[in-house]
Image 1: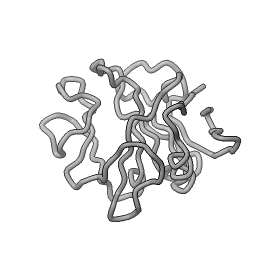
Image 2 (image 1 turned 90 degrees about the horizontal axis):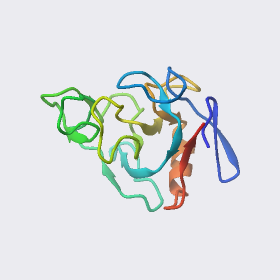
Image 3 (image 1 turned 90 degrees about the vertical axis):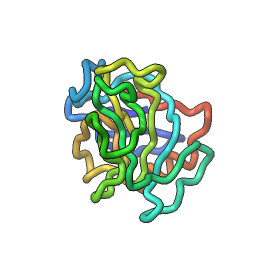
Length: 160
């Protein structure tokens, strides 16, 4: 379960960061809100040049130099992995900083994506303790790796 300042998983507490718009009902792309609700993790990405694949059974793949994530409501591939650069607005997944060295993709607005309803709601590495995100949930890298290594098909991300 995730709240504004911490997450609990398997009896442990982890400091975390959420969106600058707080936790609530998502109003649209770029609102900074971490969507309240119950979410699943679909897959993981990692920087193979910086870390090993996360332990556990989640499907995933290394982040390539041309991987991006569409955040453009006009893009037919909105809220999906795309090649970067793209003719539409897309966030680059291979970043110079360490924020996306480990990413878990949630199912928020994914099946099918509703254009403009919000994209790229990830679990990822934080900038620093409790530094807000654009709407994702962020953790210390070792904490995120610990959580993902123990994630099962029955696990859920509960955001309150």
